[in-house]
Length: 244
Image (cartoon, rainbow, N blue to C red; front, side):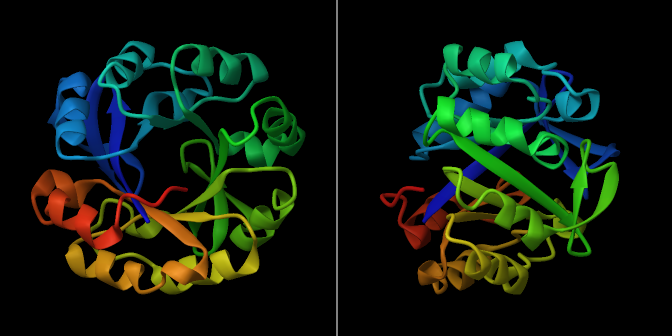
């Protein structure tokens, strides 16, 4: 499994939110390039980046900060406000390794399919759920679509991975929603990346025990920044040599 350290960007800085609430943002590093270099030097093979301002506005906002992260030389998985083919292509030209489509997967599923054809193996779909229902627009809107139903829409179009986030746990350090993540992974053939709530090495140990369930990685944020999770230990537990 792959451990994806998270860099969430707001106003050009590395922040963490509590349950997706922009009013509850904590700044952890004002220099995204420095944070990316720290993750690189620790041995991370991927970095998960979210343009939070972009997720709310519907267009990329923190472009300079994203490019600063890319400059660290670690493959970047980017989401937040990317909602057109032009935007997807632009980010690949600027060095992003994988684009994550979230809101647009709900509102324009044909764009996901088109982008998978144009950029095979480089598109992920973000499935963010509140109470089992998919959310959109920077998590500000909860839809009537079940997360597993949304996942099945993209099972046969070449999506590289599904990123499943339990919004109620994100940034709350309450532990992964492992049962829901395992259930989603069992419902589809696409590899699933777990997200939301990682609080300690125990979460990763539990996740590693499910490595044959279809879960291929996990995104970690606040626990790393707060020092509750030792990054080197987490990488050892998950075996970063495996890819997803």
